Amino acid sequence: MTCLPEKTDKKLGLVIDLDICVGCHACATSCKEWNTSGYSAPLSDHDPYGADPSGAWLNRIHSFEATTAEGVSKTVHFPRSCLHCEEPDCVTVCPTGASYKREEDGIVLVNPDTCIGCKLCSWACPYGAREYDYDDGVMKKCTLCVDRIYNENIPEEDRVPACVRACPTGARAFGDLGDPDSDVSKSVAERDGFNLLDEFGYKPVNKYLPPRINSVQAAPVAEEPAAPDGSRLEKLFAWADKALSR
Amino acid sequence: MHPAYSVIVFTTSSGAGYGLLFWLSLAHLAGRLPGGAMAFVAIALALALITVGLLSSTMHLGHPERAIGAFSQWRSSWLSREGVAAVATYAPAGLLALIWLIGADTGVTKLLALLSAIGAVATVYCTGMIYGSLRTIRQWNKGLTPVVYLALSGATGALLLAVLMSLFGASAQWIGVITLVSLVIAGVAKLAYWRQIDADPGQYTTAMATGLGGQGGSVRPLDPPHTKPNFVMREMGYQVARKHASRLRRLSAIALFAVPIVAVLIAVFAPGGAAVLYLIAALAAGWGVATERWLFFAEAEHVSQLYYGATRA
Image 1 (cartoon, rainbow over the protein chains, first blue to last red):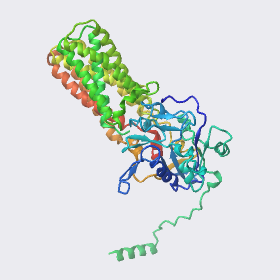
Image 2 (image 1 turned 45 degrees about the vertical axis):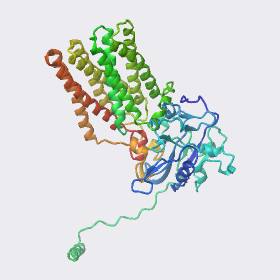
Image 3 (image 1 turned 135 degrees about the vertical axis):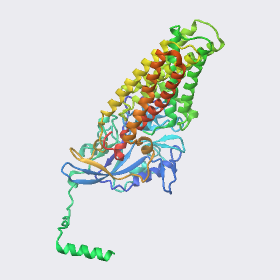
């Protein structure tokens, strides 16, 4: 059923701290490792060790240079995956009902057995979070590791999404963003967590924590070397350079 | 957006087929459709174009064998509604074709023609809304998108009916006038559409997409997340040079509107060479509408490209 649930019991999602992400891609590789061997068929790759590698990944790590109005710039590593929006069109545009949002926890999933691979859901996502699997012929997306978080066959500390478990700096947190007393909700309130493309209106569940202001400092910049002034000495060097280059 | 040939063939071919079905149904309702072989050939051509289009549209699916499931989500999905409308239209149109094939003369044909005309409009409107409802692509998310789809379907369909009627020696002035009017309406709608998308620079920025930069700041990509283009870049990041786009727009406007309008105008006032003129008009329009549809995709910019270097979308 591709109509959205009126409300979900929980709003499970991720909080990503852009202040401490170091852009190591561990979350992306660990996501690929877990999801290529679990739920649904493998995440196929094409020419993975060749000159033109491509493949389906559920998590992508960008690096941006963000410059403030005052001219202070900072490199920000920026993981991007499905935000498990509350009102996303990726679910409602699906003609078969394969794309759906779970009422119990708000996770947005694709049923790999009924997806016809029309790709319309990826067109409806402004975040570019869905990637088509050419081998499997169905759309792939972040499952919030639905096969880990409720999995009683793995140790309790592993019952979080693979990306969260892998992050070496603790830049990723998992929890119920619908519960104001959860750790994730508290950190969002404390740090002014924000939505990506809030103006778009899909109401993302995942939140991002901004880089801390006091960690944005202008690095000392060395003085520029003086421009050539056309003195006799410079002309002599220019002549010598020319003579020796012959 | 990547212009997939299967979708270009689908929308142009089934568009013309539904347009033809619409006009021949109206003509039959008005008692103006020449009977005999002509009526059957016309509806058979309409159904053939529709079927070729629908089959072509399944070619870009990863799992065409599961397409039956696409009829289930008509409550929320325009793609599903399109499928339902397309299949529903086959019933009256197919029956009509059958009745005309065996040459039976029954009063029920008027009802079937009415249902076919309604089905044709509904299906093409749904096709337009698949694109028109996507807020991620500002060039598509316009009220004019389904209008242009309907108008071009009507214009190309009318041209086909005019060609058939003149080939069967049953040409009449009314079909020339209908073709002319629908071509002019389609031309005005398309030119208005182009003007509208040119005036819209896009309301979303990289700063909104990343939440970085703050007031008056800027954000630029530093390191890409992958070394070669992924699905999102290939599917959503197709770019056509502005210079080529404006040239192609001119070419498609000439082939789709200018040439057919002049040819049909001559055919209306000098019915002597109508068959040749309508044929020229239809061939030009066919080429023009394929170019127009290619541009519709190639010029469409997707919001997700804000993460890949686009500054506005």
